[in-house]
Length: 236
Image (cartoon, rainbow, N blue to C red; front, side, top):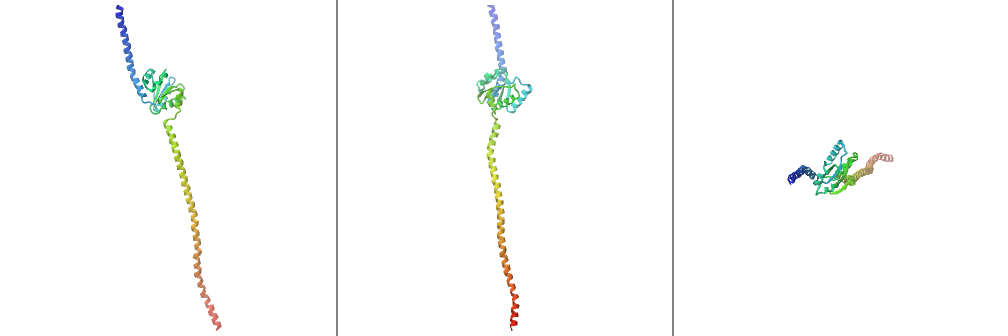
């Protein structure tokens, strides 16, 4: 009887201590869960990777490339990520959250994490892409390889502008050729018109000389007058 009286309070105190300890740990971890929740809020994609085998230099370089692409990258405990993923599309990633895991989160370019990670993994074989959720759809490791092959938004816009500018440049080239041909035709027409204008001038020249010859003709008549006078004198 006395044993029970003294044993139960001891057990009760131990249980309370454990519960309080658990609550304290949860309260300490809640800010981290809130941080993950804030990161995945309105995210276009989340990719889970295993980066255990990366060297410090490789990890630093990977973080730099992801940051430049507008991607958030951080290592978290799987239990905390599962709690943050509850009630979201990213809860589909719970099955791959085993072992050390890191997440790459993008809010604008949905394919950026997969593209940067896949490219980096070509030179860092220890980087493993486990899976990802892109615009609400779950993709395994093979599916993420296909997602990584999708061009970025900037590349797509560049190709679109190139295709739109091509017909415009062709039209401009044709118009330029037409303008150049029109200028050449004008020069040829001017060259042909010049001899045609000279021809009438050449035809008018003899007409101007003819009156001059007629004007000189009467000047020879007075020379015959003395000869007639000589004939009259001999007749007398």
